[in-house]
Image (spheres, rainbow, N blue to C red):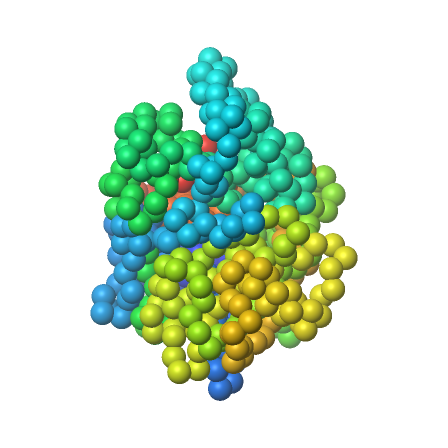
Length: 501
């Protein structure tokens, strides 16, 4: 009998890990092809390389466990424990924010403890009423970001604190944003009380969902899991991705770079064959396809399947930039791995101090820092202007001052047209396209990767979803469940998928 054939479209972390799961958990003897339109594999988990300087990651990338042991082991086992920086407990994710003109080092949630008592009382009174009303009147399924925030905090907090924050990030009032926008930043809690009082308040699930312990480094063990973070001891996440590719290569996985799927042929509710076309126009046909996992974005698959892209073009903001710097002194960010900027008037989205979670990143060449900038429409887009903006905003944040010298500076603009904004229009169109693809009833085609299902965005939830898809795929051999198309199998419906926070 011929070997089964799995096609994985997209060579980022999601695609590579899907291949690892298929090989280890479902189909160890089958052929697996990973098709990637770029010349390299790893996607955003790769690194930029500068001659004479070294590597810089694409912003901040740490692998956080899914808390599915078989998935996490497949990733973390590609390096011995001695080659990992393993981040645990209160130092798993040391994050801060710049908000209301201050860099918060103790908590990544907006800290309102210095707000005047009268104003804070109004906020907390609104919050308590929101808890009561939420119990009596659940939110509609399609509530927008503004409605979600009001139901969570009440109107006063939402209007004063979180409307400006979301407008800074996404250039729209939250009434025009999808619920997903509230999940892309740490805005689900506020700091309002000191630690001793919060120990009592945290006994309430409703309050703990809205109020945070004010010092992330002294947080008591209220977590629902023991999730850890992993970063290689050798600076540059590309070391991990290169090793992951080597492992897959040793297992006989076929890597197809500089290529894309140009044709999917279906019959009887199944993908029967595909055509792979290289950038130089060479076609390769693969017949007898067992399974296709699509981890390369929803719109390209819709186009391939002749699914109409309804609603017009997505709402976009200009392409983001990574500004990579080597400072002559340690940045003044205390223990923070990174922080977000929530104040209007700044272009910084996030600042990462790599040496905080990878001590080996600091060398005699300097302290590596990355500033991710999200320009506004009309901003100058030259490399020099972008670097100057990053340097001036670091000084405004108090991360550097006039005594700092920059040993190295470079800027990289993200590829593509820009960042899709999580507006009702953009996310609604995406959900409509996914529904039309599902309605085709193609039993051996699974959408995976970022936005492969509703609100699936961060890597832990992406890999949880990929694992679910792999275990439900119609293989006739291998470990785990093997639903066959003839039994009426349909692709997994992830509309209600939620991250296990």
